[in-house]
Image 1 (cartoon, helix red, strand yellow):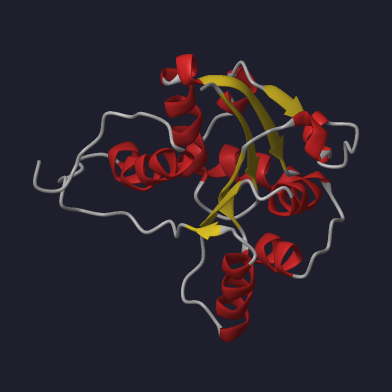
Image 2 (cartoon, one colour; image 1 turned 90 degrees about the vertical axis):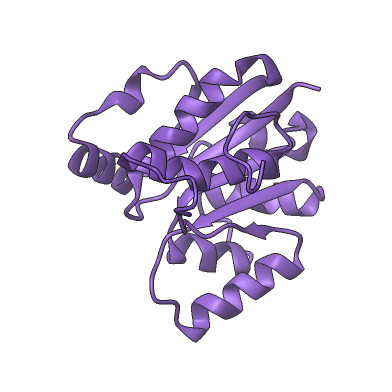
Length: 186
């Protein structure tokens, strides 16, 4: 089954996660029918600062403005089955938990949750305060998946991209896509 995936990139630090996710989705293109991308202005600025480029512009995905409520996935009828917010700021998480659909990211997340589809939030903050934890609880109880940007080290990553891939490989697994990656004890 080919997936229709929404990727939202918030302005949280961790642009490397978004880059590695974009790269993985390109590699798995036979399993993916469509990728719709939303990037906040802060996300573009953080990408440029952290990765020292604007390569996000070169990916062959469908990009939508942060307030484009005519985007197909602003409605459940478009049948996008998965949404990944990577990285996900605590402000974005809080608005989703509060049911505040004030931009395309939060509207799409609301649609995904109401349609009982898959919402994956790659939370990027440390430490968490109780508000963050309660918002994560609310989103989880609503059907979302919190996948913190907490890399693993047992695969012995040697580069920043390999380290970020330890998180993104989990995200890809959560999406239900087939992916060759490090597996514990295999």
